[in-house]
Length: 483
Ligand code: NAD
Image 1 (cartoon, rainbow, N blue to C red):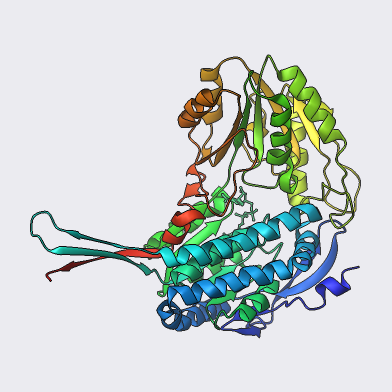
Image 2 (cartoon, rainbow, N blue to C red):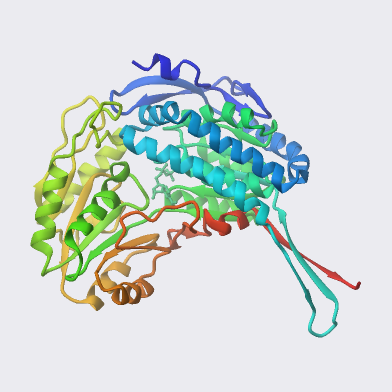
């Protein structure tokens, strides 16, 4: 079933423009979450391999940083085109290793490619400033230099896009990178390397080192004297560890961490539009997204209509192998992820939540969990404070604007919030009071390469995409001149 798709996918480490085994020959298995079958055995980088990858990146740094911005942009633009040429093959590969429905994977490939197109354009807009010092009258020339070798660490939920969102701006800025993809989904990035080579990315500028030994391998890179920046997307828990490690060499850090998104439906909302938005915000990627709606707050006046319509839509979603036609709900990524969803639902139900659809783990094989709607979820339910990371909508009601703002903000996270109201004045007023880096106002999807993506509070530091994403890989230098 996979032969054609997996036949040419590389499974070794990509260091300095060459495929290499791990220094100690270690490997680990990659599993298809829909079948629980092993689909590949991938080299598992050691600390020595990680150091070699940083050395290769450092060797490539000067020449890459010295290329004209337009030349780097043309290479990124070419990479965008080649990814779109190979989009179907890459989408199927994502589905095989991550489980998500093919329609989600196709969306992800297009989104991932867009970061190369966007930063091909944005990289040529690295502009500085010239001014006069108010007292001395000297000229102040301010410009932005590539920081240096970047360590990129990415999660399994978007195996392509979370990586290109970092590789694109790093390369546009002139920085070489070492990427450590998630152990669950290393194949997509390995498959991207021949594409980047074909696009003209020189040896050593992008290195990929999957590893089962994530902790020590990443730690060794963060303590390598040539590494200047770490850009991480993943859980808040791991992000905090990397922040501690990054402190030792005072690295620049970009952190895209967990979320706990509220989805607020006011009494004056277009309920049908809110349902469409809810299906996207909750169900894209089977709920395995940092941006996934985690807590629904529905005004008591529209609660009945919203609940009925959402339950009807969720109940008819087809669950199955993501490669099969018509499937919109694939398996979760692994047993651990599925068991966490089971535990959170059981906890909420034991405390009084009502199951309107789903709520029961099917028999295997595959790490499946059905689309589930829970109403009357009590405040004490664990799922209101933790990322569910699964296809479960937890519904609560509210009565006043002030109350819902307070409840929405009552979390350590601050990535994204969604709200639906026909009154745009109210929408903007409430948006301003919500402590979230991104707001979907009458929209269930906020991600866009041209927009600054990122969170407040414990959801992260820095922004990806937009011009801000480029600045994460640039350092400001000021030259004081008499001329
Ligand atoms: P994770 O934190 O477990 O892993 C992320 C990456 O870190 C993986 O590559 C993993 O191998 C590596 N890692 C794990 N332990 C490590 C350690 N001790 N030292 C160094 N690296 C280590 O996260 P995950 O389960 O892969 O992804 C899900 C999480 O990612 C969720 O919390 C989700 O909200 C978050 N996420 C955030 C964004 C965002 O943009 N804010 C986007 C996608 C996912």
